[in-house]
Image (cartoon, rainbow, N blue to C red):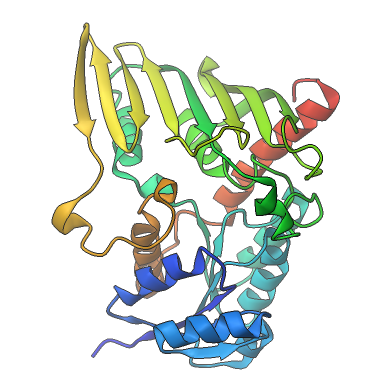
Length: 341
């Protein structure tokens, strides 16, 4: 009988059930506990999942029956919690971002590189079927050289989204606005597809929520990648609905574009659908959550534990987390100075 991996979730907010549901599908992983400083919230989730409820994550540092911890806490808590847990010999999977700024992320990366356990970052959109197909087409050169790409995020956040959770909308705790919270997944995909970033020119402003938040609700950027690939990016929380993220990649021999988890190829005047949203037996128990989160947390979490069991490095590690945070910081810096970096 294969040994079970005991795990815990810290933070019982909206994303925590997505992690818990995904773990329950894994045969060799067992949810032992949930942790939240809001004790009624922790007890409610513990009752729903049949596990322990604790109010202080430091309990986990001494628990030999817990080998892995998922961090679903506010951004500014990720780095310090992750570092302590790693030093205590726990594997850590943290929600994005891995820290609320690049400096804290780099310190966490240094700690992770000194530890024998694994640090993973939740960029689950890399596990979406269209994302995988796009990456394969780029790697194989099927459509020739990548020329340019763009990503568009038009979502909606009311003032209450921030006032109900005061850590949001503040530099010291959220680390930014739409860039670091909502659009970070799209920026991560652009960087994954485009390669090494050479320069960034961008702007980040509060266009609608300026009386509620001290960070941005809208941002755009022009990103130059290695090899002269040009990327364009736009994101806002000032729309009145959560529209599907739009991606477009233009190659020498065709154009790929993605919307609503469908991937299309336009070539020689014809449009062909290459991928459609998963349904049926491939997704027997879709995790709970908001539709625009996608359903690939389950795939990422399963892959994280496969790498723990095999002892091989998980690819979405602290290095990848730092690279995407670096791109976000470059946009912020460009916005402040209006100078390309």
